[in-house]
Length: 337
Image 1: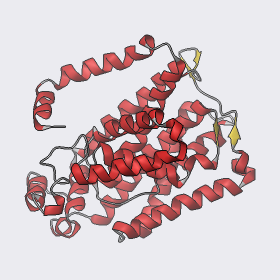
Image 2: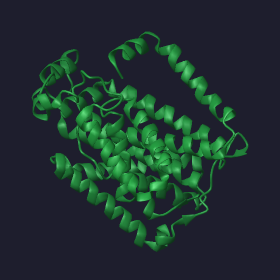
Image 3: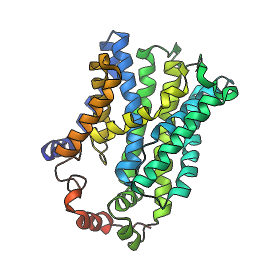
Image 4: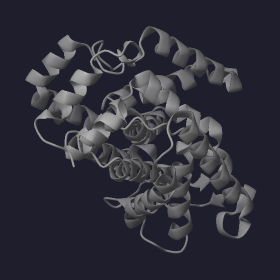
């Protein structure tokens, strides 16, 4: 987002948000094709998943590339309990809570790790979960997966149709973005960003590094679990192959392309990557090469992503610009403890 667009948005924020909300509500009534609505619903799934990863990678500077593992936990939690008769609406939140607890368990022993070391741990964690789902046949169905996952009722309508399920996903997208915005602009969010820029400086200013890193992982994992839980009833089937390393890198590419450390970045990245997937569907596995080229081009030409500003800290990170000033401004008004 350029500075001019940002200024324009800030001046007319209420009007713009109301117009966007009205357009979002009207969208299913304007689109007749189920295939198009299915694509839109899938994009919205990834808005939640990319936003949850952006919380971890973009705002606290931790490097998680095994995000598919959190999505797997959310999907399997809902799928298993739904077949036992649990109400779906409760399971959406419960799946997020369970995933958040697992995120804390993963975070606690890795709080001292950074960069590639943390990335390898999260990568291994994701793959371990996938192998457990593949081999624990009695619980997860093994390679056959879980079929016939029930979908919730929405105003008396069975929500398996994309036009109906769209409203359920839209509700959670709005809640995800709203809560992320509120947390990012709170004391907790300022602590995350101070850790991202310089954890030693943040510690000297009174920030409890371990505490805020754990909260960050839990918050990101919660929304990854909710996103995974939303996917399961829509597809009515899940298996371990849906949560491979490719899926983790797919989500990561959306964050990088859209813009890390920005609220709108994951939204833009999800739209761009999913549309690219549809356009190059004929290329099959070669699409991964296209993602790699897009990411390399983005890191070289516009490291802050499509939605980032040219004056962002991420854009100037390689030159060491603005970091000290950023930390001072970030914690000037209110000390983070």
